[in-house]
Image 1: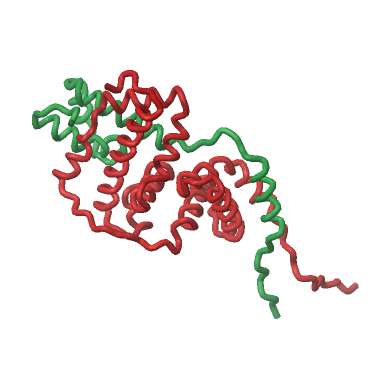
Image 2: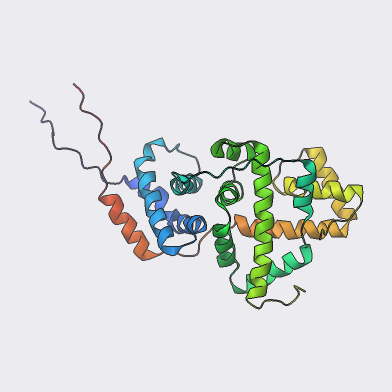
Amino acid sequence: MTESVDLTPPVVPPPADFEQATLPWLADVRRYAYRLTGSAPDADDLTQTTFLNAFRGWHTFRPGSDVRRWLFAIARNAHFRGRPRRERLVATEDAELESLAAATDSGRASAALEALERVDLAAGIDAEIARLPDAYREVVLMVDVEGLSYEEAAAQAGVPVGTIRSRLYRARRQLQQALIVRAEDVGLTGGLG
Amino acid sequence: MSDCGSGDDCREACKRLFGYLDGVLTVEQAAEFEAHLKRCGRCADAHEAERRLLAAIKSSEADSTDLALRRRILAALRSTTLPSAPPSG
């Protein structure tokens, strides 16, 4: 008995396990893409690119690891790839970190967050993250959203750990100030004085 | 416009605030930080403000999936073929 050999070029459908594993995270990836791009159409395009890149790289996914985090990293890499890196070496002295950590008006910041929670804090956060300079946005997304350690973020960004820390602190401070201004701009001034 | 106090303990606590929230302090440093918060209302307020800010940033769950986008992505996936392995032999 001769076995027949199928010589038809393979048309590989998306593996069912790929769709099953990744599509539940579509909305989260779309939100992450919006934080990266700051524009709805660009976020849609980046989301599609992310899923296509993920599909092509599905064989590299390590079973058991975090699919959502993997997709976020793919989106981030796709967004920043090809963009000129505007690196700026930031000296990270203890005194500077101290001032960054301390330069908060906790009363106004808390009141702003509370006020925005009554409207739509998520939209405010997303928009303000999208407005951060590339280097700050990248580190906030890596550390605060993807959960990378400072060391992992430094390796991915190709900068020293101290630079990651400094950018992260600056970015958080900038976000805090932006949220205070946003709360005031939309008239949620109660308690912000 | 620091909300931290002006003493040495407060300055040290402020310096460690983000490190504490990011879980990168040593056990001893974290314990010292927590002990300071119990003694200092201003630093405790600053800690609470930063904790809330980070919680808002970290929150990345989205409420709903855009069905049109889902259809668009499924169509793109299904028209994509993976590169096949080169024929052996």
